[in-house]
Each structure stands twice: as structure tokens, then as C-alpha cells.
Image (cartoon, rainbow, N blue to C red):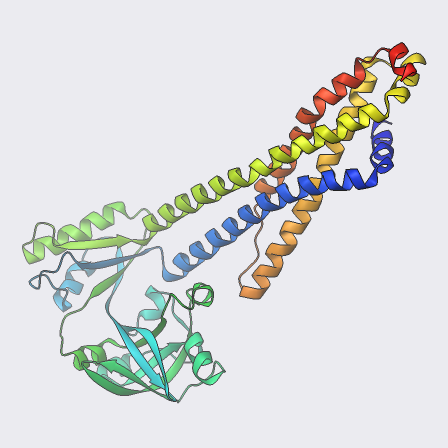
Length: 391
């Protein structure tokens, strides 16, 4: 019964009620947008790291000492460590690529036939680098789909030629595959920051750069609890080379946890800042309810004269206050999800919802309605019937 009366009372002053609910909606909209963007961003980062392989360690020499190198002997040393499944050498170079008159910055990776299993590289068109390419030091490459789209306006350009700058001059390579990796989503959002990736046989890269060593080793392990394995790998390499602390091992799983913590802190902080607007809108709820009490003083007197208790009047006004905030929060949640969904469609990332944040926003709005509606409800409940009827 109180709920029905509250709806009727809200509809009495539609404009004032709509403005009050709009204030609540804007506050909730801010919280929902920030929490949803944070949730989507976290999911994208996690997806990228999982695709790259959180069960993969990246080993490289510490510092700039030329005496510490990674060679075929290093690969053999790491492979003998318990818990290691597979080891792949890697080389990397920031360079430039030329195709049909266009010059684009690119990050060239030298890989072998195991690239698909260690960094979850897959071919959308064509094929990946295989053992024959590595043995022959073939001038073939696999490029990102984004690079193909920027150059030709389509993704399948297998068989085309691209010139890569390596070893002081340009070399012509045949495109044998178009890669589809977990990085594509981030590259789509960060086109101006992240360069395009290209993959060539590691032997080809060594030959063109005049090197026999490697930049890194990608180590596939058989346990997600990789702390002990990291120590074993580092110890084995140091013992083999006679070093004390000659190697650095990047643990993608620990980096994933750190990124999760940072994103959670940032999202929570921004959500709390946005939540301040909810508190501010609570003042408008109190103002609306105080005006409502003043307009309905005579009505309150009549209700009390025919037997309404103070608690009945108080509950009626509290219900109306909470209802205003809940309707406003529902509108804010709907608008926030709609805007976030459209944004995800535009940039091409999966849409995800932080359900706990939505429920918390709705609950916070309800609490604000109760808190800021308490005084007007108390004032209405304590009006003397005789005084109220005279007004």
C-alpha cells in the first residue's frame, strides 16, 4: 500500500521528480561506466597475457655485458631443468617495413617452428614459420592482420612481398601467413602506440644481423606455480656460465597479478570519486522531500486525524525517497551499460559486466535515499495534527 501511494506522490510533481531521479542517474551512470570500463580493460589485458602464455618464462641476459650471452648451449642447459617442457630461442628488433610505397614501424621477431605453442601464435591466413624455413634461413615472414589492412585494405595478402630493414639495409621477404594473436585487440585500441608485429625464421634474422646468439629464451613450463622453476632455471644458467646473477627471468604470471592489482586499485579509486556525485544528488533528494512535506502538510494532518500513526507517515515518506533513488539508479545503470556496450562494438572488444559494481551502485543509491530522506520523513511524522490542519 505504501509503495502504491509513493508512486502516486512521485507522479504528482513529475518535473521535480524527474530532475531528482536524473541527478541520481548521472551519479550511478558515472560509477557504472568506470567500473565497466575497468572490468573490460582487465579482461582484455588478462586475455592478452593468457594468449601470450602465462606459463611461459622469458629469459635474457642481465645488464649490458657482452660476455653474458644466450646460445644453443643455454637452450640445452634450460631443457635439462625439471619442470621445463620446451625452450624456444627468440630475437627481436625494432625496425621499419616497406610495402607498396608505405613505410611502417614494426617489431620483428625471430622465431622457430615452435612459436605457435610457446606464444600461442596462430595463422588466420596462410601458415606459420616451419622447420624447413628455419633450416634454409628462408626470407619469409608472417605479419599481423593490422599491417595487411593498413597496406592493402584486406587481411589476406599471402604471397605479397614486403621489405624489412635488417643488418643495415632492406631485404625482400615473402609473406607466407597472416597472424591472429591475442595482441590484436590491444593493437586495435593502441594503434598509435603499439607497432605492428612480424615474425621471421630466427636463423634468417641471425644471418642478416651477423649474429650466432639469441636475445631471449621462451621457456614453457608444466606448472603455474613457477617460483621454484624460475630459481632452478636461473641457477642452472649461472652455474653453466660461471656467473653469480647473470640472467633475468620475466615471469608473465606475476606480471598478470600485478596488472590485476593495479587495474583494481585504479578502477576502485575512480569509482569512489564518481560516487561522490551520488552523495551530492542525495542533497537534491532531501530538498525534494522537504518540499513535498511542505506541500502535503494538510494531507498529513487529515491522515493523522483519522488514525494514521507517526510510523505510518514516516514509512510513507521514506518509501517515496528510496523509490526515487532506486528508479534513478536503474536508469543510470541501463544508460551506463548501453554506452559501454556501444563503445565495445565500436572498438571491437568483448563486452563484460561487473555485476558486483552494479549491485553496489543500486544498493548505495537506496541507502542514500533512506539517509537523505530520513529527516523529511521524521519532520512529516512529528507534525501535530491540529497544527497541520490549520496550514
